[in-house]
Structure formats: C-alpha cells, structure tokens
Image: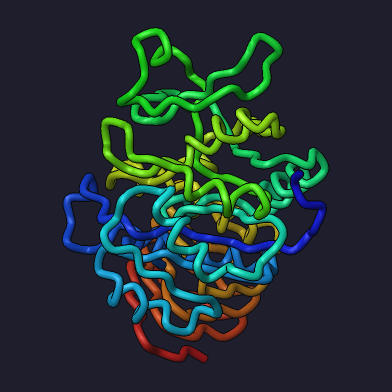
Length: 327
C-alpha cells in the first residue's frame, strides 16, 4: 500500500535537446527574462526543501553541469535518452534508500509555482495515492497526452497523442507530466515499463495502468492556469513566458512602492533592486545587478546595466548607463 511518509525527493528532467528551438544551445539554457529557464525550476524545487534533489541531464550534459555547478543537488546523466520512464529508472539508482513522495518536474516548465506544487503534494499524500499528476486544458492540446477518465470521473489512463485514436484526440484535458509518486509503488513499478509504443520509449504514463491493475488509487489534479504548468517548446512560447515573468516582476515592484508608468514597455530583470517612490518612465530597460535608490526619476527610453543610481537622482531621457555609479 502507498506510504504515509512525508519525506520528499524531487527529480527534474532536463535531458532533451529541444529541437523545436532550432538552436545548438540546450533548450533549458535559453534565457527567460535574463536567466536560463532551468534556473527557475531549480529555485522552485529547492524552495520545496526536499530530502533529495536530482537533476537528470543528457544533451550537452557537461555544459549543463558546468553552468549549474553550484546547484545543491545531484546530477544524473541519461544516455541514451529513452523517455521519461527511462530517466526515472536511472534516477532510481540514487534513491535506493529513499522512502516517501517523489515529485517529478521538467526543466522546460519554468513558470510552475511553489504553491501549486505544495498543493499537489498535499492532495497526493492526503489521498494516499500511488500517483497523482497535474492535468490542465490548454487552448490547443495538440502534442500532449490525453487524460482518459472513467464514467465516475476517475483517472483511467493516459494516451500519448501519437498513440491516440481520432476520438481520444478530441479530448482537451491533457497530462502536464508533473507527477507525485509514492516511492513504494514507483520503484518496483519502473522495472515493468516497456517500449511497446510508437516512440519506442519508456513512458511514465504507463504507470497509471500499472497502478490501476493493482487497484491502487491514482488521480489527476486539475489546474486551470495552463500557462503555468506547460513546457516551453519553441521561441514563440519562450517569448510568451517571458512576458508572464516580466509582468510579475513589475507588479511586485509596484506593490513595493515603485511607480512604473507603462508596464507594457518596461523591462526590469530579476537581479535589479529599486527603492520606493522611484518613478520609471516608458520604454526603459534595467538589467543586471543594478541598484536604484529611492525617490529617483528614471525618464523614458533609458537603458541601465550593472550600475548604481543613488537616492533622489534624475536620469534624463535616452540615457545609456553601463557599469557606472551615479551619486
């Protein structure tokens, strides 16, 4: 039966190449509003305070390991890459003595929020489930595995699109691939996965059927905000996600007493700090480890990078300030 233990292990899957990005750079290293998209996932995973934190890498593994060499977790190299189930089979070797909940995340789903994951883990553990996944209904479900429910609304199975019938493809509820597993179910079940599918890969989705065959509870936790739980697959989706991050940062600063005249044309990176009662004009970009004091007036069409602007200063329009300290 599923375990009641509350220990948490997080496994982040980041082995793929990301061919739709049309780039030599690994997908998870593409910048999302100033920092690699994978960094967002690592930060969220760390905020969950797991007992074990594992990152599965594959394509250009050494490059990823170098970029995130200070990350406080373990790297697992997946080669060859034979699917998500295969990634968990490899990661399992680093969790031999672990007992509890295994949370599976993806390096290309950077908008996932801590509160959503906490709720997922809570629902999973309260339900004493073998597995719990996040489902959603995107505007366009093409490319995603479909959630199949029984007449009572319970999770019955997941069908990957390439294996789905025409009728199944009309289902809009999809599997995000974000899972919680009970370790007592997961670890012995991974060895039962096969590659009998069109992709010739080991699918984590097959674990739903394995759980049902054992009459173990499994469920789909529906999340209405699909943009938070879906991955980035191409540069258009990267830009769209960047807009979400950008507006969140601007909202946070406005709630802390900073006036932003036109949020639609203002760009402030994560690493920037701004004092209260500062006014930031339209078409302004503030980047890097810039520090702007209180009561400053940043005019329109201004670029500030890696600089310090002391309290009460006015920056005139069309200024470009880089690596300076203004007092």
